[in-house]
Image (cartoon, rainbow, N blue to C red; front, top):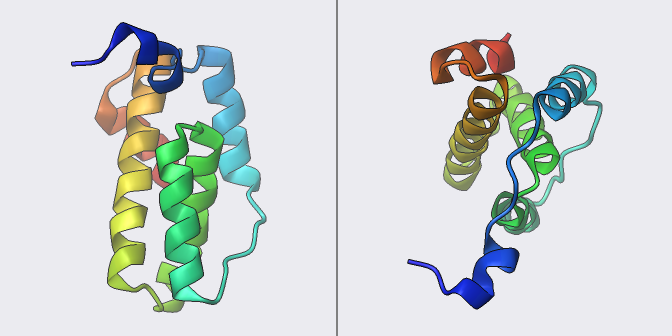
Length: 109
């Protein structure tokens, strides 16, 4: 349940198919850095995941994938990695009209 007066602050329009293409391009070209302090990183990632910004989800996902490849994920990192992946899957599946499985394949390739 959601109060009508809160609608604009809580609900956003899903990304379009064109924006989904830009999102995948951002995913392919990501060249960001990951914070070394796990507490600061966890707080920042949680804030991004709560923001509703799909491009921010990419930043969290790619940064944590990088840490995973280095073998340095903490429990909170693992939770944020999984959450960012699920949010990206939902965004892309809806925007492209595909299945969640198809969206997951696009993301993880």
